[in-house]
Image (cartoon, rainbow over all chains, first blue to last red; front, side, top):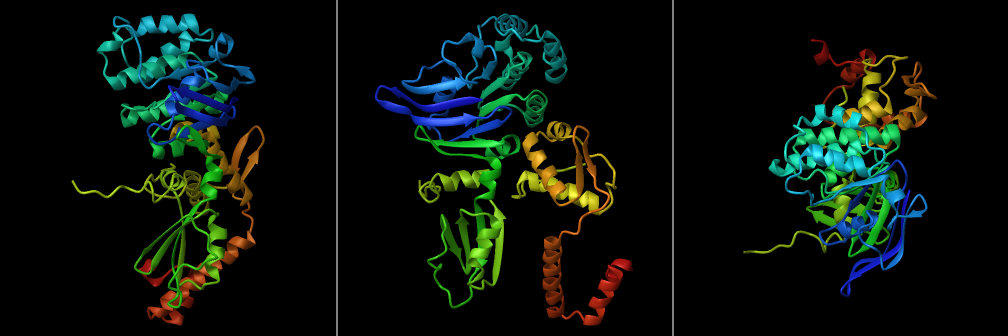
Length: 298
Length: 124
């Protein structure tokens, strides 16, 4: 379990992380989402033990990560910007990682070559961006990590390779109880692979839930009120409302059945409860209207 | 086997559940058949294993499958008659009947559909 408790990090007076707390249960895939500049990468750099927090604690199975090689040897990450020496070949990298991570499996490395189909004698710098990402997955998964931290991991990967990579990761999750933290803007994809989601904004955690709770506690209700109701009745609680013609769309913080039951007494001509996608939840939780696409004319 | 529709706003677990339910009701999967393991399905579909587990749990709760500890999930040999579900389907049927009447389908014709379980058009 990775536990972040009340962590604050300030860069020259700017609160990049502001008293943030989160928990990543073992064996789960935790999706970290948030607008640009929310502090996701800063948080991830703390989890990797690269940054040291000003306040608070970051622990992996109860042990602090900062300057702790025993913990770090079980945690591997793929950063957003990949770093390598200019002459390095994939094989050199493999030896380098093998020297650092005690559980590195050469056997797995050889097996995975069938998935990635890249010549290990090639220099990393001569590969395309997407292929470099593949190399990192190849080597990272060969380290047999217990914790895997991914910052925008599938950026640059083609659709086939995305699926391959997620299949490999999820196989480790169900077979070895691998714990994954993944930051991404691809909410569609996170919805498939995650079971826990944390939404960050301005260095704080806006909301942290299991995907199940998230999907079951918010719903979009489309309904048509009878003629005598022209305004949305006061006792209907909603997060967001929209009216197009006679059709009213309400975003309600309830499950589908409760929400439908709530409006029944007004005898609506028509009610339909539609589940929200993670993308919609993200937009509404981060302030719906305020975050609506700004209308401007160039 | 199971195909997911990413344009459908229904959550993934619900899609998987509906897919398997349909396969059981239509007889593609027969009682006693073993379902793929959570890990197999998670890897095959690139979906979180907990999402698959949720679909299986709900199918078990509704009596469509039986989970045998340490062995896997099997299609149940007797689907329980979930009274809630029956009420819901009856409700849907009433609505459909009203709609058909509104469109001028005669009661005679409706009775025929109920008795045979299929409409005349289907048979021809």
